Length: 134
View (cartoon, rainbow, N blue to C red):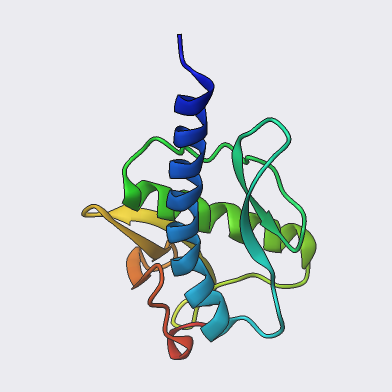
């Protein structure tokens, strides 16, 4: 049986993992998103870590137990999805070369922004260059 202390440790550890993943996504947002977006990791009323975008969100099916690069890709995908729901007229980020939306993916154990239009990596998540997107 799992003790409350073990559960609390698990929750705090997962919250730290989410925060680290969000640091990379925030870095891309700060360089490339016009306007402000509040993206935060919180613990919900069920003692489960989750991501909020502008105060809205859910646990979103993010696998908190997987490898770090997968967590970064899933968090980026979740934040992107929330932004698209909140800002229907914008897609973030989009490939400048192909004018198509980018998608988070894992390539060679690295979380990246992937262009399906040209089947190429545009950037690692956390290192998105504003000159590469529209």
